[in-house]
Image (cartoon, rainbow, N blue to C red; front, side, top):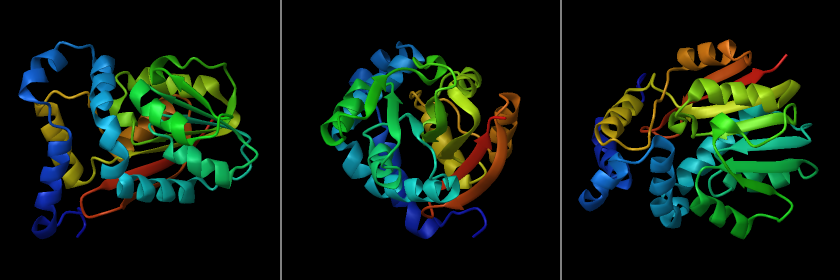
Length: 239
């Protein structure tokens, strides 16, 4: 199936995803009046307790695919933007045991869960991708897994990635890919519900955005981790 969609087996799964992002009617007006970044923080304050369990398979499969494409075992200073509960950082303690690891996320509730399971040597920060509280030219490898579609100012955030990335460093971006019909359906639903979700993109759109930020795509792949979830991973370099 070239568009990665099987109506027979996935309507129930799609309905479950929509239910996961549903705002209780009593809170809908409250959410709508929040600034975009505060919507994300408020949303994940609610989801943090069940996030790990509900998204376990998605996280594991998307993370493993991302690391296959990254193929960078020499990095010594690594940043994870949108680190959530710290699953990727935990994996990196095994694949890059000598590296200095930093994670940043908007949600204090998600970071709380990350701190509970990660070594204290990992630096965890609450902050915004568009205004990274980090020094320029600090990291030789930066990851972002499934958070780009939440970034409210994607252009500025990519400029921040360029700023904190060392020359010859790599940026690995994995996100929902709008080249898949299922992702377009999910995004349409999220837009109608006025969630914190901002904008998913096609592979071509991401490549153009990276190039415009002087982060030059070196490798990319579109793939499915399930019939529902169509993703893309792009490896870009700062020259």
